Image 1 (cartoon, helix red, strand yellow):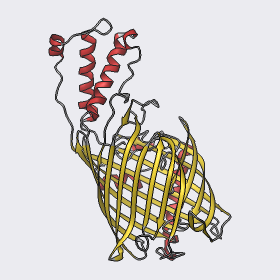
Image 2 (image 1 turned 90 degrees about the vertical axis):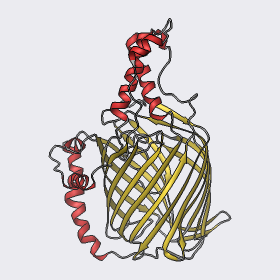
Image 3 (image 1 turned 120 degrees about the vertical axis):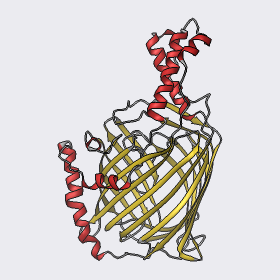
Image 4 (image 1 turned 180 degrees about the vertical axis):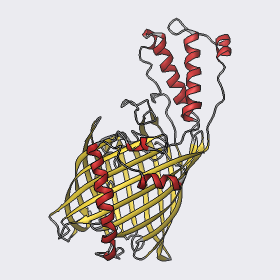
Length: 460
């Protein structure tokens, strides 16, 4: 999986909410004006009268056992089985057991919001074991190629996570802190770190390029065996409902620390502001989201300089690849890594199921990232219908249809380049709204084609 994180929080915050938008593309700049000139000021008046429309924590036990069909851009597709029990470990808690097969093979147990002594203090945990998975990595920057630079395949890998939360005022204010430890096993035999197809029949310049790319990618991940991610955050949820908000405003700040052996250590700072504006009877809700992320390196990963002359002296070429081409390629790979990757951080990437849904996971990344999106959620067949089948028990609330439009950009500098030449996604989503969970299927089209996402939970 792609690891990402940010920079000076105060200057980043100013960029996200205060930069002028006169350099934006004309039709994309309109989206900014809707979000910043209309939606956000309106939210100031809207939040003054927000009340929760239903209890946020109940003692009713509900459960769902279901076949899984997942599809996540950039990660693949497959199927499996899942089960979720609400309030099984205390009021407000969730227990989920998931097993999936296909492009990804993983078994997991997820506990969320388990109350400890009081509903205001909660515990969340994750236990996951994987046997198979793959991830496509793209080059850094806003002008990166749509073709993956390389692909990593994973074998036996596992992860563990724990998080503590403290909430107040009917869960309108939450603080949380936690950490996760992952041990990935990279399968180098099946991973595609470079394109060596018929390398011997290609000109020396192309041979050198592929060798350089292979060396850079190998240096970036060859010693990766342990990743530790810590997270702390603040959520201000001044909406009428935590699971399916239809009115109000929500602000989320998160700070991630990525550390580990065999990778550059860095921090990220994420800011997300979402506003919800219902029509007269709340059968339709306009949702606007603005997201900004910045990152900074805390410990660079370096391998020193490569000695080209020593390579020429001691190395051996072949009939297909000369020793000069080989050594030049290896030297370039070392230099590319040390100059462009060893001391570079990555803010939260764009692409995947939540931001720029027409692109695969982590399609665009750099030191900074910016995203803005709107969607209109139409509710159909609204009713509070309790059901109690053999494998299902809960409350059906509505079906939802949601057209959406999103823009985003990444940059290596905290300036106007982050607000120009936006990537975009436009599409429509179908959702099943239950009392405690949202099932969604989104189809999005953008500048590089279309993607379909089948997942649990809203994109924003």
